[in-house]
Image 1 (cartoon, rainbow, N blue to C red):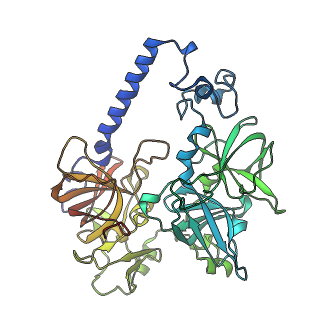
Image 2: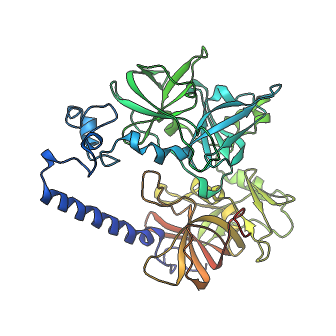
Image 3: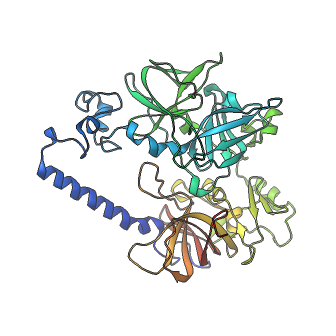
Length: 479
């Protein structure tokens, strides 16, 4: 770590690791396209080798040619779904939709409503349905239940709240919000929670609605549709024909059902947040916004007592300035910056178990593209420690025995729900011994390294795991 931060030798960054896969896929797509062009003209062939009524249908029920007068439709002609239509693609998006059970004081039965994921462990719900609750649980397709930890964003004007759930990476899915509101005449696909969570192939109810009118009121987009909404609609997402979140169902001031534009989620900033108990007592989510970064604030944090085993907070790491962390001992391990729970002691026999969101939080102060060059101590303190992670694994195709791989928070599958890794949620792994195993999801224990790989204004890589060993995730058979 004594080298210049721009000259540190590194393995290829994650973007190059996955580049070969991407080039292969692009080449295959181009080859298929050339073959299709030689065997028939565009005028008399469907977009894909599917029945004509499927291949040419759009969600509105009209053909691609009939919608050609719309500029937006023209840009969408290639189709996110190969011309098959959003209805046929609904099962791919459905894992992001779940059931939320809200437990209110004095009520024996929980209030049940639809919720959907917008990112790693982040649930979007109607604010009016969860405010005042004692607690809440999300129920996934597989029947797994997870407790809501905190309320991390609050938008009363759009009846929207964002909830935080500690969710294993293997189960994470998220919908991407559309930048533009839908147009009148456009159709949206509504998806509800699984009818019977826990069965082998759970079915999600769906409904198509046609946009009748779009208005902007108090800086929120309000969407009116031509048909009545189903009983399960409250909290449900609505997807446009490109698979993006065009709206969600919530309440208006009079308690009636209303559809708000999905773009509101793009302006929603996740904060450290409050518990349900604090929310009921009047503590606002906004009050948890971290104070501005100043030397005075850092001095206050550095003056706080440090747990045994932790010396004075460093002011520099690898040539970058360091923001000090607030550390407290807990029965399980550490509480960091009043936000993150870390289990273990950092040894090989008792490694730290670190949440992915803690690694990702480095982007709050360290983002070279934005001129932010301060590393948080909550990340740098892990350097040299033994750490355990569970995540999705990308392994090179060519080698029978591999010694290097990429560990990621999200599955990188290249389809609609695939989320390419960033330097903050991907770890370059060097195994202690070569392996022929090719798990898609695994646990890895190794010595953690924080080594920002910066070229110019770009950050290509951030984290390494050395002398690592493959293991089974928690709860896996055989543990």
